[in-house]
Amino acid sequence: MLHSSIEAASILSFVCVKIGAVFQKGFKKNNVLLRDIWGGFFKASEYDNKGKLFEIPKPEIWMAEIFRTLKEDADFYCFINDKNLNYFLSTAFEVGFKLHNILVMVKDTHTPNRWYIKNCEYVLYLYKGKAKNITNMGDKTATNVQMPKNKIHPSEKPVSYIQNLIKNSCPKDGVIIEPFVGGGSCRLASYKYCSFVGFEIDKDYYEAQEKRFKDFVSQLRMF
Picture 1 (cartoon, rainbow, N blue to C red):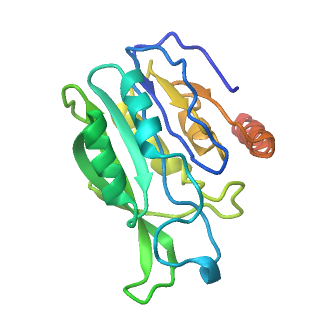
Picture 2 (picture 1 turned 180 degrees about the vertical axis):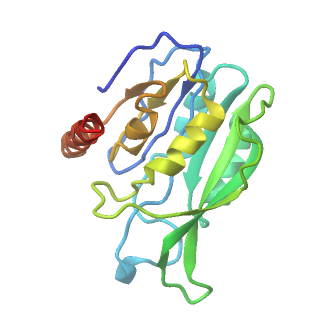
């Protein structure tokens, strides 16, 4: 487990779901939770256009647990591909979430497709309880991003993009919870801004992101 101080008014969390990952129980109530889910990574020769890139836990199970864990007026971000968008959104409604907006990451990478080349990833921006404004209300739903190079995890997200979501929804004295740390982008994005708690079930990914974090901190200390 990765952790830091949890003396905070709210919690914001990202999750990277992969084979073998299980949503961790035990987070305190009255906290804000965010979550990051999408289809994953694949070889073009193996993709059948059904959106099932690898096995992930059923959202009916973990999304209900997220809703239970969240404090009132909490935000929840869920990264998703186009094929699973309707399924995940319907499930979110069933467990009690409401929809703020659907955000779009316009990526500098793309996936070949016979029905328009795919270069977008979607983010369900959900909430529990009452809606609250984001910090920067001038931000648009679609954002051009540079995807990470030399990724250590297949569904690794740009640190700068996650950092913007954190600052829009989490106060500076808040806490980030990421039940599936993966490549550790969220941990880097929250560094020096708010507290962070993370879990990673895969030893290889845990060690890889731990090295990435230490290298990141070392580089910052050089300046």
